[in-house]
Every structure is written in structure tokens, then in C-alpha cells.
Amino acid sequence: MAFAIRYKETDMRYVMIALAALSLLALGYSKVDAAEKTKIVFVAGKPSHAPGDHEHRAGCMLLARILNENMPNVEAVVTHYGWPEDNSIFEGASSVVIYCDGGKGHVLNENLEFFQGLIDKGVGLACIHYAVETTKGECGDKFLEWLGGYFEPDWSVNPHWDANYTKLPEHAITTNVSSFEINDEWYYHMRFVDGMKDVTPILTALPPDSTLSRPDGPHHGNPAVRKAIANGEEQHMAWAYERPGGGRSFGFTGAHFHRNWKNDDFRTLVLNAIVWTAGLEVPKGGVPSTTPTAEEMKANLDDKGRR
Image (cartoon, rainbow, N blue to C red; front, side, top):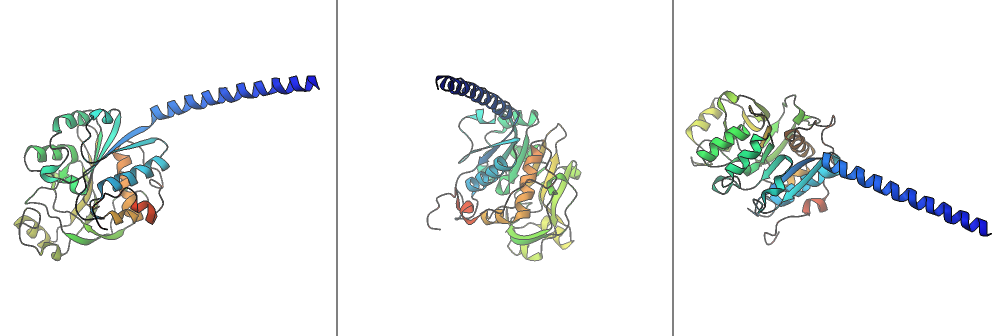
């Protein structure tokens, strides 16, 4: 009996040692994995518009969660309610995704010098919806340099309409994305770099005349855009840009409505684009994700009063 007890105790010690070794090994691997992950930083803007519209925080957290759950080589982090107080969050980032209000209040307007440093390192950039708009002049010039195109007041327009994307180009961003039609505030007549050099249109359609029913204004219409639509010139609502100095960028004018993230093609296209801007290979079947549930869509919505 004593022998049996000593045997069991010895056996148990070996088991404990083995478990400890496995734990240390696993810890070592996790550290290596974490170090090797591609970091993507989401900058979510402040609450804006009506409930369900411009849900910057909820949209960023939804996309970041999907990436973290389905892309083992990605570490997506989200900073909330505008530009972070500490720029150290961008250390080691391979791409920055910005989803915020634009124009004079764009988060990049007061951070041009800092962000130029990231661009110089080849860090990717993706701007979603209103985040593609800034002011004309110094900021607009930087957006052309960094994003390849932007919403320029008194040139571009922001109507709500049903865009039908029937022709998608062959590009990593369109992997496993089928043609789709969806209502959104699809900006168009964007200001692009000269000759669209290094720009690949991703979502293209011809807006109906009804999108220019409003009088001319900084966002509503102008002679140039009216002439373009009258001439039947197709417009680009999303685009990829391979920056001449290195780095990838993506502009996406949709996502006014939070509900549109439930559309599988809409969501997959943006997820693919984010991964592409980070310099990663888009999975053969596109970035995998399931259609968000009602509860997942409600998560992290801004408090905008009655819903």
C-alpha cells in the first residue's frame, strides 16, 4: 500500500511538472502570437445624428469584434469619442480606420502632422462615411495625398438613394462580395487625384436624377455634378488607393445607417478593405462573418435619447 501511495505521489509530481511546462510553453506561444499580430486601430467619432445614424462607436466595435474573432493574425482595438488623448495607441499599427463626422470637425484636421508620420511609415488608412469629408485647402490636399480622394464641399454631394452595384471589379476587396443594392447616404462626385492615378474604383453606379433634386449648396448640388449626371457619367462611392510613397488606403462613402452592417455583401466588402489596407492577404472566401443578430446590432449604440 505504501509503495502504491509513493508511486501515485511521484506520478502526480510528474503530471504537475508536465502541466507547468505546458503552461509556460503556451504562454510563450501566446506572447509570440500577440507580437506577430497585425494591429488595426479604429478611431470612432463622437455621437452624432439621430439614433441608428452615424453610430460610429457601435459600428467600429462591431467590425473590430468580427476581425478579432475571425482573423487570428489581427488585433483590432477601438478608441471612442474622437481623437485619443494618448497617441501611443497608434504604436505598431498597420492600419487606422476612421469613422467620424467630417468637414470642419474631422478628427484628422488638428492632427495632420502626427498622421503624416504614420503615412510616412506606410500605415494604411480607411475612412468610412462622413470621415471621407474634410475642408478644402490644406486638409483637403492631405486627404488627396493620403486617401486618393475625398468629399470636397461645393463639388461633391450627399444624397440618400438606392445604389445598385451590379459590376464589381476583380480586387482583393471584392473577394466573396456579390452585386448588391442598398439604400444609404451614398456620397458621390468625389474629388480624386489627377487622372485617378493609383485609384481603383470599387463601388460604381450611375445615380438617378432624383439625387440632385435639392438646390445648389455645399453638399446638395453644383453645376459640375449636374453636368456629370446629365452626361451619364458613372460615379464612384468606394475606392482603393495604393499610395505612391507606399501604403494602402480605402474610401467608403456609405454607412450612414447602422442597420446596413447586416447586409452581408456591404459588411464583407468593408472588412476585406480594412484587412487589405493593413497589408494583409484577404482570405480566399473574404473575411468570414455571420450576419449580426439583433442583439449584436444593438450593442454599443450611443445614447441619443429615445430610440
